[in-house]
Length: 158
Image (tube, rainbow, N blue to C red; front, side, top):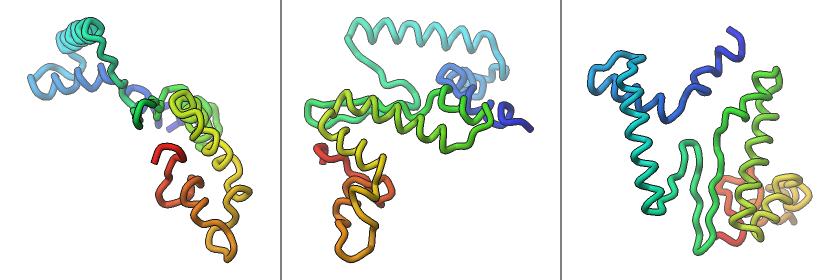
């Protein structure tokens, strides 16, 4: 099995596919039912029209909505582009860095002050926090800023 086949279910996991599969299970449609797909498209179209009229902005699947006081951010946790390095033969660390980069870019739009501290800490955690557990190092800094800490807190958003 090659990488494309292995990750195909993840790429095909879309809201429309899920809705059509739900209709197929719940109302006894076929697995690839055209009627179910048309129903999903019509319902989604009407829902989007209504949301546009009411001024509602929906968070898309695989996005995380973060809000604190007047600031907010949408973090893209998964996009098909994240799989491109893996499908191209690279390892997961390349994809992971891409995910972190895109999430940080989105986070900076909503939280510019906090994002600067996170960027510095995630790029060189040892430089900013010292080695965790060694006497004389700032473990509180490690808990606040380092992604390896058990609980990651974003400065300025606590």
